Length: 151
Image (cartoon, rainbow, N blue to C red; front, side, top):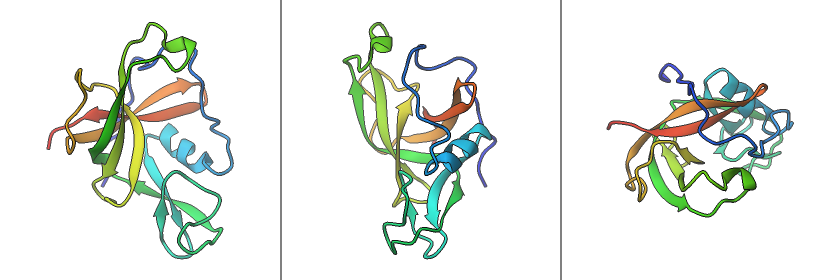
């Protein structure tokens, strides 16, 4: 059972960042779930295979009947990078931030990419526990982020 969702009170990134399209027909279910404080991954309705990021069809059976599976929002850092150079003008004065590949606890074969909002300088440890939090980045868009967790 997923934990009660946590929504950030303050934005993580500064204004002016580019935003994904919450109405993209392939990923719309992902963004709709995030608005509700749920983390989901795409799952094939034909064979049950799970995949991330969302795609038009299943990578396992090549079927086109794709749905969504809610996951716990808990995982462990599988890999990470500390980004030091501003990728956009909005990040000019922001400083370094951490992007992690997170292995989900309830679907270890599935890894999600995202920002760790409270990573220490030098980054998290490989295997360190994280949990999902949600940030409203536009009126119609909520994005998952990761926070360090216990255990």
